Amino acid sequence: MDKSLLLLVALGGVTRYYLQNFHWIGERVEVSTPINSFKRVQEGVYLYENGIDPYLGDVVHELPVILVLLVRIFNSISNFVPLLYVLIDLMTATLLYKMAQQFVRSKLTEQKFESSEYAVGTEELQVQATDMNVVPRCVILAYLFNPLSLLSCAGLTSTVFSNFLIALTLYFLVKRHLLPCIVCLALETMRNLYPIVLIAPVILVFTQRSKNTFTSSISILALFASACFAITGFNYALINSWSFLDATLGFIFFYRDLQPNIGLFWYFFTEMFEHFRTMFLITFQMNATVLYLVPLSLKLRKEPLLLATVLIALMSIFRSYPSVGDVSFYLALLPLWRRCWKFMAHNFVVFCFFVVTLSMMPALWQLWIYSGSANANFYFGTTLAFSTGQIFLVTDLLFAHVKRDFCLRNGLKVYVDGKEAKIILE
Image (cartoon, rainbow, N blue to C red; front, side, top):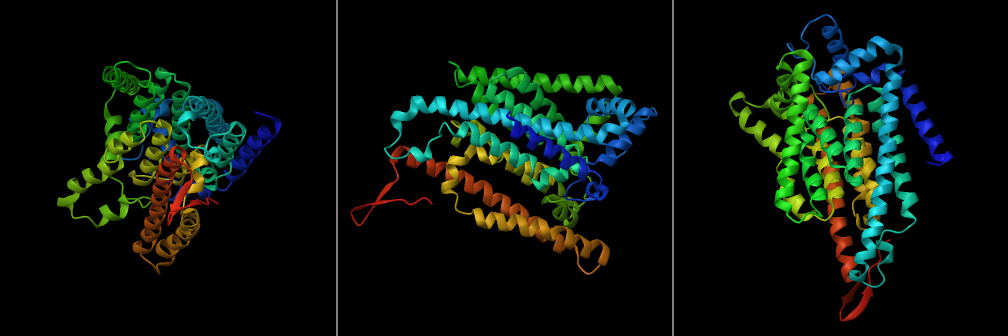
């Protein structure tokens, strides 16, 4: 990194540290959920220190390995815990920057071998040498100064740890380091369940050069399962109890806490008749995990990182306890697909969705909870619209990728009434 970028990183850190003085941020339901709440982590630390199993109740939902690590940190540098969250978030931004550099470098290498397949006059759609500087800068700035990531870090949410682990996974993915990639993914999967879908892009990347794709895929799946079992065993050894499984993965899957959030689960299951709950619970969880996995993996098999971006976005939209910190992470990955932006048709609509809904959420929460002049329908309407805007963004990105790929190979010229006409992209 050059000096200007280091100054921006420092500015991002200072901004995060300053915002942590506003303690009400961590109490907002858009920022804090039962899964990532700092108050619940503090409760877990207190229970563990006093010899009480923190997972016997329905408060703590963090893995024992993370909880024990936080106990050591709270005991040794309790005054610097907010600074720790800032440093981890800055490390996430740095990892994304390094990952973007490696990604652009690999795309430039690929283009050298595929350039003969590209149509004449499509240079503006191809990755350029200037992207080596522009794209990583856009990625790190999109994470450092996204208001959603700032709020997530200021609220001291454990989403900061999740983003760090996923950034590590993506970094090792583009660097083609299999074992650390699998370990990071397994750890995050055992924490939040939904990242299990990222095993698909991992398999696609590490089987590209394999002679026997099926055997290599099975080997990677076996390694991933072994890592998950090893992490589970290590967590059991820390507290000598299996209660953490139900308090983490079980709590996420069975959706026991109906606290409102920016997702789609809470209102639906509040109104749900109890005898229908199991069926719709399985349906919703399938929608958040396996439903889109196979078709997207088949379509994007040549673009594993785009597949990872889309899957991260989908699990951020459809997971049971989403927060704005989850959304901020995949938004920071969008500059990787800078060459697709010319084909994205709904930028203004998506921007309006984001600005309007995120502005209305606090107002409608105030009217519902404190003023009593509104009800849950008002707040759920904004969260539904927010999810709709995100879906528009994901589908727009996918269509833009398909259009770019078509134009790269077929050119930017079309024929109208038998006469040649050029597509105007801007």
